[in-house]
Image (cartoon, rainbow, N blue to C red):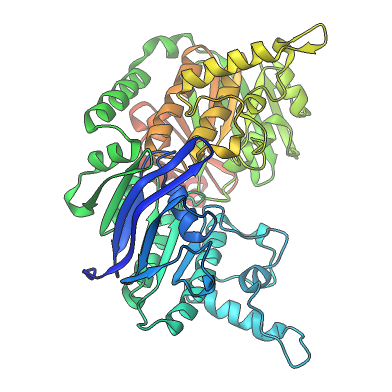
Amino acid sequence: MASARTALEVAGLRMRFGPVTALEDLTLSIRQGEIHGVVGHNGSGKSTFVEILAGTHVPTSGRMELFGKEASFPAVAKDRENHPMAVVHQDVGLVGSMSVVDNFRVNRFKRGLIGSVRWRDERRLTSERLSAIGVDVDPRTLVENLSASDQVLISVARALMDLEQIRQRAEQRDQAILILDEPTSSLPSGAIDSFLDTIREVNRELGTTVIIVSHNPREIMALSNRFSALKNGNLVGTYVTGEVSYSQLAALMAGQSEAEMASETHAESVSLLTDGNRAVSRSELLKATNLGGGRIKSADFSIYSGEVVGMTGLLGSGYEDVPYLLCGSQMKTVGSIRFQEKDLSKCNPRVFRDSGGMLLPGDRQLTSGVPTATVRENMTLGYLDPFVKGGILKHRKERRIISEMMERLRVRPANPDRPLNEFSGGQQQKSLVGRCLLRSSKLIVIDEPCTGIDVGARNEIHATLREMAANGAAVLVTSCQYEELPMVCDRIIVFQGGYVAGELSGAEVTEEAILRLCYMDMEATRA
């Protein structure tokens, strides 16, 4: 049972970015020793709250207490390093081109008498710390060569090491706070449970207070003692997790009432699964035969017009490479691809686009979006022809069309000239999906469309994908989120070990069926 003492309390917290108010008079109390969830739709202020605690932003106004004592905000505190908080950010804060030990011990290296780093000791310490939470990797390995789950756990282990130093300085050993910002957003479903067990152990064995920001209702239900819901920068309320239903929590996350959530998602699901017209009129749009490349060894599959088809599997099973093999950005080693009766076996991204295909990569910060460019520029990226006349770009027409698209997708604030990185994660993703709607592509391939976004934004993106399919396009979604794929897909193709393990359709499309295919013994099946 969590202690009734207070670990963190903020009052009157306000944060403005120019004319935009991210937090408006937020007052929130977190008990010592508890696991406390922070939820809300994208743009609700939860990420801004974390960034203030991490020292990234200085709030416009407000006060903070830590373990019963008035405290300065980290960004302005003279003794910032003494604040009893460690943060694991959504992007984990690791440098891929550096080794594990370099990332783990940066700014923490122990040096010898002449100032040289004791590398043997550093590697040993890194291995011990990582082994303690179940990560078995060579400290000399480059981070970019590790799985997403190992990268997250390395970031957590680094934060735990900082927390240990915090506890040594604290008046009491349990006066430390671990803050997790969307820690599982990049993890495959199979790695989430073990990660949550690690967090529970940190909370139970060390008495560490844990604050977890998450868009995943199941995660909050399984992990937290209490949670606080934010909406438009304000506190909606703080709730005991065991006294709230899943549907109530999902509604709070979406910033909607429970009735609104039920009517939207149920109606959309029924129309998806019972629309017989689409199945009757569909035709084969793409066919891959003996496709190989990357982690794919050999795969045969077809994609049809008018459907949403999902691809998934365990991390490293090969499904992650399919989008990039299809569009030609990753080299194929064997096999053929026919798209609208045209051989695309040796295509490149330009040929794929000109043939009627479109790819939206999974990383909206690095590959699918340009963070510092405006939403207007991101939506029309590579598609300026409709806005050019006589060699001159018609900005007014471009701005009008993008404004209409933002309203259609409910992107807030609906300002096409605002940089993409000034929007929350869900609003960014909706904007990038809007790029797909602008074009009349026959095949839309979207990698991890709902990573790190809230329930409301997820539902809106699902509705947009179904709209594309209803209009005759084929939509391919690759994702490691098993529970989300049945919400949007007509069919799901599951990969294992570089091969297609099986295909699900109709009533077979369930999370449980996906898991069975992920873990079934393919060797025994082939034998």
